[in-house]
Length: 245
Image 1 (cartoon, one colour):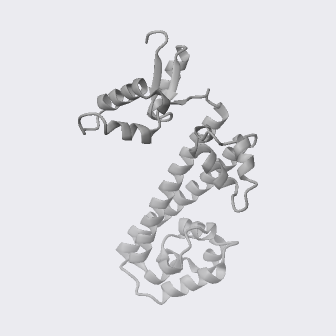
Image 2: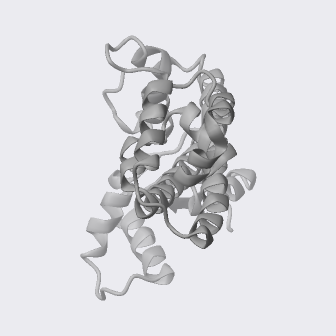
Image 3: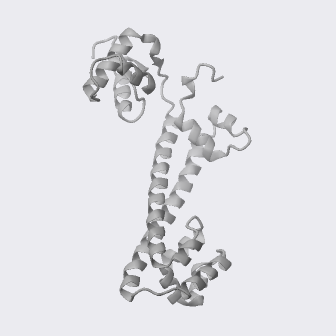
């Protein structure tokens, strides 16, 4: 790139991060065209197909013709960028856990609806039981001693109610049970691991943001806890708002 070139991106993360890093390393000025502004500007140019070439053309023409639409790009806060990276991983884990919970509920519902209705997949005791014993019929076959060992510290009243519901239901074939139990165990383990890792990441994010002024300010707002505060800080560029002070 020629000296004095202004590098403009419509995404300052993901695909735009590399372009910004390379531009800064070369000593070039950088600016940000918000995605909404880029979308509106695209309507002023011929064509409707969304291609990389057309997007680059729209961004360049808008930067030349309407420089007031550009926002300055401050030097990245490495601590905040690290928190954003962790938040992205946390969101991925939550998405995977939600998918696995939906799959696990589908299996339980097909096997024993009364048991599934009582299952609490957000409870660590339930996940421990399903991971160790399998589905409703694995739980029923384990016996109360094994069930007690697998659910130590859990809500035993609800688990006993689920056990009674399974025992009172129609049992499927042994082939179905043999196929079902390993699936339930695997899904329960994955949900537990994702939940534990997400909690660990929450702590790491809170540590990275401990000295962030916006994060500290948000924590003073009633009803906003560390998780919500971190989500807002990593998702919103507060410098985009001229009256943010």
